Image (cartoon, rainbow, N blue to C red; front, top):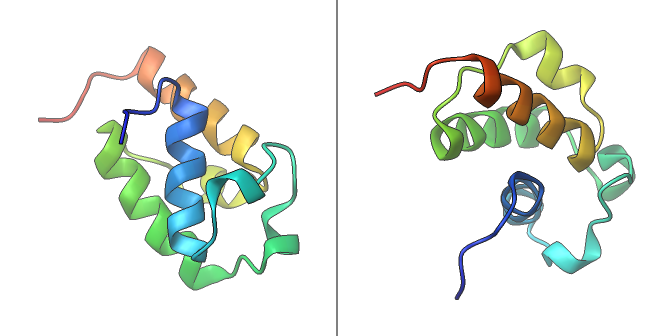
Length: 86
């Protein structure tokens, strides 16, 4: 399996895995609630995204991101402005 080549692809992969669906079934601007997203999915995804990208996501900002596109933008913003964790 090849490595994802963008933050958005990695976020989509993590979200798909958490939801138990195929990444191809997730459009970047579809509200995750439509796909059955709930608070337990959110916490699992938060932990996995923090690990994958070595960032500390603000819980409030993360919960305000309702699409893959918004989550990827949040991760990219943090990666651009924050030192990476060890």
